[in-house]
Image (cartoon, rainbow, N blue to C red; front, side, top):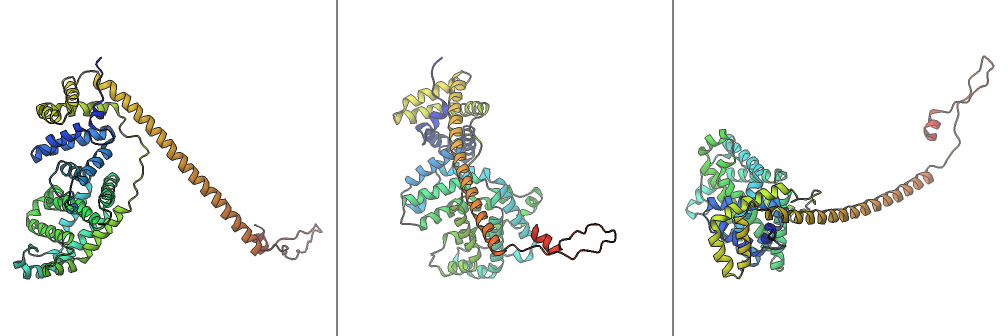
Amino acid sequence: MTEVPCISELFFQHEPTPLLLTYCKIMIKGCDLVESRVHCKLLIRYATGYGLLREVLSSLGKLEIQNTPPSSFIFRGNSAFTRLFFYYIESSSTKYLNKVISTLVDEMMTNPRFYFDSVDPTQAENENLVFESLDSVTEIMDELGKLIISNLDLIPPQVFGIIKELLNEVQKKDPENTEQVIITFKTIFFLRFLFPALNSAEKYVSIQLRLELSQIIDQVRSIVKFGQLVVNGKHSPDELTKYVLQACGGFSKTVDSLFKTVIKYNEIKSKECLGIDYNTQLSVTKELLSYIKPFLKDFQTELESNGHADIFNRIFYCSKNTKHDCLEVTPLLLTTKKMHHFMMSRLSQLQHENEFYLKKIVEMKRINKRLKSTLESSCPSSPLQTTPSLPNPDNRRSVDIPSTKSILLFQ
């Protein structure tokens, strides 16, 4: 049998490989948005099947950060990574978006205090209308802030883990520019995740609300513009913007609070080994290769022009032999190595936990001993007080009965 490297090794080896970068360039960035989302979903399924999703997204994100010269533009472009990453966040956080957006829309429909005429706060000629609407807008923004914070448990922990990792990379790139970290966070969570979802509110509300959404869709989009103003306009010299920022101070506090939560987030390590389901790996590998087939000519041009003809030959061979044993044997060896590595790291983690709890037990015993000594020294022993013996009409031997107080002390 011809020896063929594992497909997952061609795609990822501790950092993005030429094949992964070519896939992103041709099948994510190089396609229209609809087709690109299909290819994003496919790559996420593939990386998840091999337990590499966290590594793939983090490494591609770090590469994007390093290749974006002006730090203020990080994740604001329409790159292959931003398409992939924000598709991942959106698709994995659907429950969160459903809850936040449907609750807000329902409140805007039923609460009379939330009614206002839609207005664009960025246009100076709308100044009077902005002032008239600001009370209602402020209440809606405060409600949105509460919904954002109270439903964070609906976002998968891995999402926060990846975001925190990317923010740390931004800090490393420009250690003196601490403001850039929070700007990047605002870009990720608000400008590229939450606000686009609000602009497409019909995707996240119930059928009943969807039928009535047209009544307030303009107001929802106005709220997005106010939110963008708050997120972007901290140092704006415009007087109208300054007034809006002051009025929406509650939402600004929500943004800052959420940023601090993510920065301090401690992700719980998984106690399960990911990426060892052999049948899933085989399935997603065949699916990936079937989607690559129509783009083989583009892959050949891109890989050969960058000096990676050998990689193209391997992927070409695999795509033409999806029923061949080479797709079944090599991944199994990699899976065995992954399982061994996980078990050893898990054993090390358990040893550290065991040492930690042993120290806690010794410390608690020491504290208990001190407390016992303190109690004994503060409560010196005294003879038991007894009640007088009762007359014994039968001339039986009398028995002294300890008092209740003595019994309690004795116990």
